[in-house]
Amino acid sequence: MQYLSRIKVNILYGNQNVTMLYRDVYRTIFNRVENIDTKLDAMKPWQLFIKRFTDIVVSSIGLIVLSPVFLLVYILLKCQGDGCVIFCQERIGYKGKPFTIYKFRTMEEQAEPDGPQLASVQDSRLTPVGRILREHHLDELPQLWNVLKGDMTMVGPRPERKFFIDKIMKYDSRYQYLYELRPGVTSEATLHNGYTDTMEKMLKRLDRDLYYLENRSLTMDFKIILETATSILFGKKF
Picture: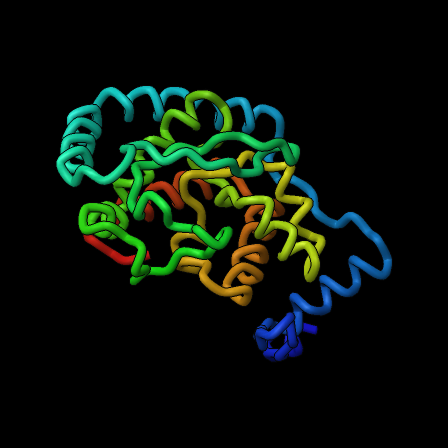
């Protein structure tokens, strides 16, 4: 099984040819046929308490210390003069409940006239200021408020829209296990999977997020936060 897990398999999903590891295909089919719940949260209750306490402290300090950055971004977006500064969008979070995520707006006011679309690195809908914010991940700063409120956590799977969750679920129903986690500002999948602009990347992200669920710890969270901070400071694209 260890050898077979390295073999890549092409699967036709809609009109896309999706490449996945044999291991992932096997686990998906096995779980569906046998209906066995194999996903367990690795974090103990006391670790979850510390994680939430840390989220409150970090987000509170972040909102205060980074307030000059918030002001600068606000001024830049206002000077750009073509829409609101804060972008609000409904995402699905803990226990499958919807919440409103906050970001600095990086795209044109009417970015999705024909319905939900996936964003890409060189997205033509990005505004000049928005492109800079995206490159340095400054558009994510308002999510510190989401963390403080408890909608999100610092480390966890990226929250997705129901439209795309439904598409993922048609292929891989394991996505439902992510409802046991608060969505996060950053994650191992965010750092190493890049923009999820294809179904293949969505499925790879899901596998990484499920691995996090099964193996997460406070130490793992600390390493992810440290790697995220280092990547941002040194201008690494992710």
